[in-house]
Length: 305
Figure 1 (spheres, rainbow, N blue to C red):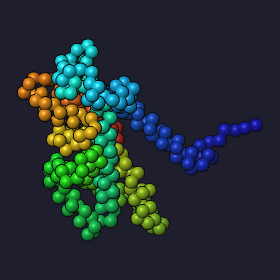
Figure 2 (figure 1 turned 90 degrees about the horizontal axis):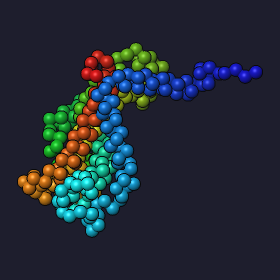
Figure 3 (figure 1 turned 30 degrees about the vertical axis):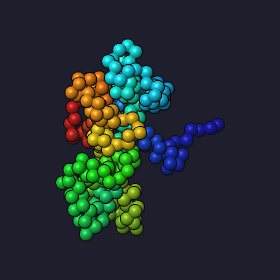
Figure 4 (figure 1 turned 60 degrees about the vertical axis):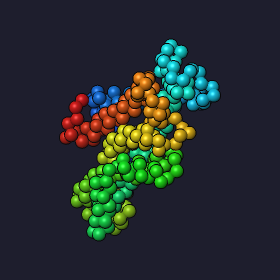
């Protein structure tokens, strides 16, 4: 006769996974009560699907100038719903294909920014002393410097590529995360179980990785969703200024092409509106998701539903 084993009898790893699943379910139940967060999540899911399916929807040759399906600056029509750019390429296909680059750069830049900020914040909050003082003064210097100016300077001196854009955005937007994570680390370090861990022989790495980092991860998650929107806007700005990779299609690059083609003065609105709306929608969606995540992780914030 077989008996079902209890979660505790399955071992600590099974119990840990069960707790993680229960925590994820609680998070989702609270998150779905935020209508704005659900709207943002649905918008992001739509753009993500379009980006993943772009090779099937528009083909990998959508940026090819020689095989352009329309005439230069052709008006929107049933054949070309968003019209054509200055080379006669299908603007709808370019906007869909540009989602791949803009979303990828935004995600990678946000991950790099949050990773730098988390490492600096946790270590500065844990070690303190002269080490924390030096790191916080460097953080303060980055905080008072205009982020966009620093990103433009880095993108100017480095080669024009997507990696340059990611690095330029990532290394200039981490100070806010570092400040928030350090404050949370200082609060965690005052809890009794940290003292017990030290008394039992826990080293610096053990305390930071096993006790401090899990407690600051909710803050890091919320900060990541908020930084992604800023990173996408920064990528669009750098590409608009001509500092992006000219060989790839992005929303900022399309806006820069429209500016060079004189779309503003000539009244070719269909050249400007689609990529501009795409940037605004994705940035808004990430912001709404970030606010909802903040509200779920800290109900005291009282984010509107």
